[in-house]
Image (spheres, rainbow, N blue to C red):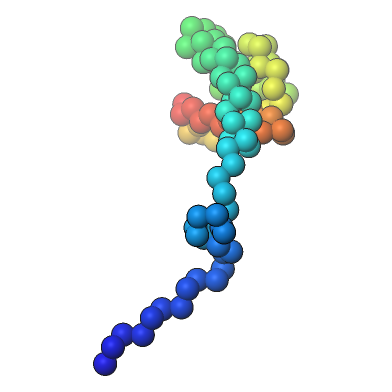
Length: 113
């Protein structure tokens, strides 16, 4: 008995120009995300530099997080030159800092402590 042909997947429309089941590749949004990230990298670097060179800053940051003093955590992060909108979450094991550019992207940093 001959095998029957499997039906062609109809979930995605076929791109008529090349027969692919995927839409044509458009890199504009990806490029915008990369440009947005490139603006955030220097801000993250400022934070990394401060934490790695100032034991007092690192101590103050972790101490504020342990006390759930979000205002102080945010003030400390801003004090190094972070200008992007950001969100923080912390646990006994780590701090997560999300720098946000609503037009393109989110840069998430997770530091164990």
